[in-house]
Image (cartoon, rainbow, N blue to C red; front, side, top):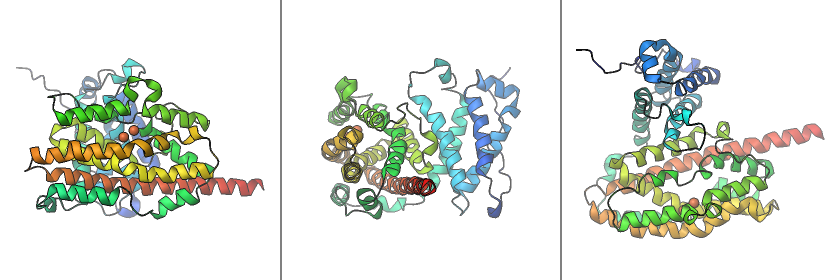
Length: 378
Ligand SMILES: [Fe+2]
Ligand SMILES: [Fe+2]
């Protein structure tokens, strides 16, 4: 009997030997990414790949190489991380609807894309988990107290060096870079939360729905949080299409977005997602206060910082909802798995700190470039 199982070219291909002093260049990964973009938009991708595996060979070689370099080597090569997070993002974003050409979604359920996604996620998630002592979380005796202690420490921490840089020093070029990078998530914010709401009704589901409704402006576009981001971009004379500034986004921020896709798509990780969302909501006001202060110091209009202002107001409350009405009730409902809430919280904090540092580096670079240009003109 003819098998109807589609066989794919191996995405587990052995990575070519890449001594650390000869790491592939950005150009190498960019070419592979271009091939991947073509695959994404190929009609009947799975069938075409089965007939002609070579259409993916450059991409697959780069994929195997990047996984080895990023997750098994000690180099922490940025180009490899960037390539992998961008590929993963391009697959994950198909889960959202962008009101664009319907043909772009032709491979949304492609088995090949799923294989690529799983291959990256498996290696990446193992690498991420290894940064924390996962076993230690299972030994936490009082999970509720552990969550309360973390929230108390993170709601209004002492200002970091980067926080002070935004508050006291950043110029307009740096501020614009910050807004450009933030727009990738800001223009579609809370989209992943929407994927967790279907299912049995209870008090936790109700509070998550309330949270989504607030983020979505109660169904009024002008009040949607993302609309405040659009206003901010418009006021600064910047592009308002989602993903317009994709190329400026550091891999560390893409990792947070991709992580959120993974946790919300897999119900097994629901507790980790809630722990992460708790940190996300709760920690926003203290970070955004520095961005708002920067906007004020630079003499920008209220609408050029409206997204920050709104969140400083509402996310303190959202953080309390997440702790009191979602995380703590889940501790009672899932006593054996509740440590995953704390793990999810800490992992989100770790990834956020890493992304914040990368964004601040990019903002400083934008400042430096602007200063150099000014000096040339003078
Ligand atoms: Fe929001
Ligand atoms: Fe919020």
